[in-house]
Amino acid sequence: MKKTKTKAFPQWPHSDGREIELVSDVFSSGNWWRMTGEKVKIFERKFADLHDVKYCLGVTNGTHAIEIALIALGIKSGDEVIIPAVTFISTGSAVIYVNATPVLVDIDPETYCMTPEAFEKAITSNTKAVIPVHMAGHSCDMEKICEIAKRHNIKVIEDAAHAHGGQCNNKMLGSFGDMSIFSFQNGKIMTCGEGGALITNSEELYEKAYLIHGVGRPDGDRIYEHRVLGSNYRMNEFSAAILIAQQERLNEMNKRRDKNALLLDDKLSVIKGIKPQGRKEYATLITHYMYMFYYDSNYFNGLSRKDFIDLLIAEGIPSFVCFPVLSDTVFFKNNDFYGRINEFDQLKSNDLSNSRNIAANVVWLPHYTLLGDEHDINEIAKAIKKIQEEANNR
Ligand SMILES: *Cc1c(COP(=O)(O)O)cnc(C)c1O
Image (cartoon, rainbow, N blue to C red; front, side, top):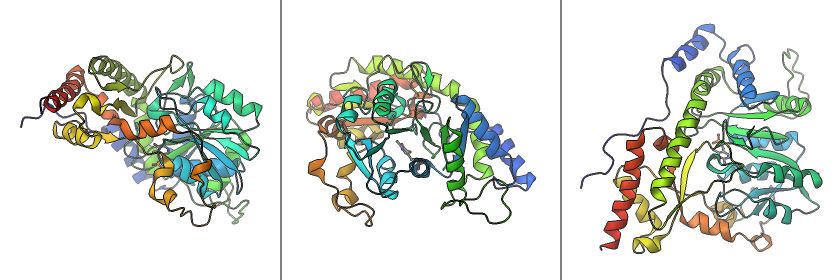
């Protein structure tokens, strides 16, 4: 059988001589950690500037960034933290790691982001924070979410792991929350293999986060002055060197992805049973960490989502299933939280009907499928059409 995809998608991670040049600087400088080097500091300044905020802290990964934000904001045992029911596990597991309880709320059927209404409805006297996730780089309705949070004295941590350089109403994502987090894991739209960052406009929160991330030691400490209980979440100089180079291409890549995503939306909109993630007008810059679409097997002669994905992969199109509803994962079902929280009462959880539907039926393509040209986009649409035709001719 001949594959529909005739040429390879652009390779990811992408790199060129710029990464090599900056990493070589670190090698020859002899300063391989942030305490004596300069690359992490340079990266932090540039990443803060990109997002129009005062402070950035480079850390080990996005999961740790959420933990640090929660600790810096004083979230502790007994507190509730509201999160979308469909997200990568870390949004919820980090909450449990600081002994607080994640409260799952429903997502919008078009954007797959937490809705302000579901957030507000889930607030109790124990709610201390909310973590909106900009799903696949589509902004949450940040103005409404922040207004509700302010009225109820709830802290906002934006999970912008998919949204480097994205915008809501022309304001940078990550600049709405009290603190915001990013991931630089291998698949993300800016990467150094593994890495993360926190950004904030609050000097106080930045300083707390700095101490927590460096085993409690202030900058320049030479007397083992551990001011707070911290851990080691420090980014190394090599990672920062790579990220400086990656950031230089981010805006151009974000634009290219959005242009190709619009093209693909157009091509898929004529295929019955395929419905791309929607766009709200406040999402003024979508980064498309994933290209997500709803798959309705009724239009594919009952072909299961799993079989559809296997066929897409066979056609040369990399594709994946959506994240599950978090409480459907094995450790949630086993109530095995290492004693950090008590039993997670599923019955107490909110109406998650949109979340269940989306988790069960959405498919996503990785962002590098949008980094090529029009030919690549045509081939994606062609492969889906071919699978549909063959399924319906069975
Ligand atoms: C990737 C991701 C994270 C975690 O980042 P890591 O760097 O992999 O730890 C957190 N939240 C979301 C939504 C993610 O996709």
